Length: 369
Image 1: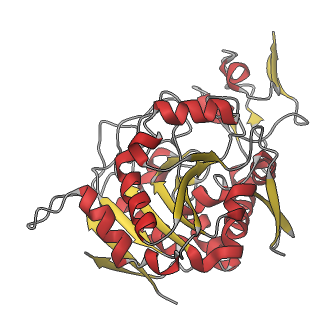
Image 2 (image 1 turned 180 degrees about the horizontal axis):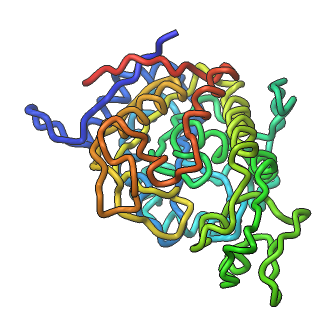
């Protein structure tokens, strides 16, 4: 199976079409309007960015999708789910305030903002998937209730998943905290006590107070650990790490199964837009935005989440890396850029297992518009 992926380059073309025009054009040429029916409650799945982050998708681009959905008879709303870690999006009140502060207000995007898993992440719908790791998965209630959905993803790096695109936006972004915890349960950080500087940063960043420290150094209570990776990402001596060989494949498989469950009940009524702009080393969940590791590329559209992520990854890897960033290896065109930042990760596992679940196909035809 080969899936169509439509590509609009970031540069203004000879007709003078700007990025706003290209978002509208991609919506039309990918035929997203064909599955949005009159009266549909249509979710626009976004990531509003952690407070302090500024690499999330521009709300003005979101407005173009809102207007297109409404023109096709749908009733759009913008949405995300509360986070597993403590931060500015941990509950719906803080989450909505953060989103509005980042420009995702009605006056800008033209649609209401709904946090899909409820005030404290206890609003969800159980979906039967009957896969290798899970027979059922929990999907955020208002994502499940929507008749159609447009998934808008900022394509960027991720410390554990390798990259974050459409698949991760579905898997982590469309489920409540219980679903996020189920995906992370295979990840248990290990401390290299000989390399540890005993600085205590891991204690400070742990969202569940699972790490304590005494004169001998830090220790982890695995009953409280949620496998979020905050300690691993924050360790300056790399003495905190996962068992990458054994834990990572399990995590990727669990992630892909949740992505499958998120769209199973409306798989033919979902469209995907990946934004290959400001391609940062980290997820938008961190409270900062680092320099881009490659130049801006463009925007992609597809009805296949695996295909659009495969095409996005290939386009990133075709670029010359930016040497002044955290990209410390794999700078040449054709080399894996995200492994040049996160050497132990392998984002390709998302694609291979995504295919196995039936989420989509990594075989794609890239169509320039």
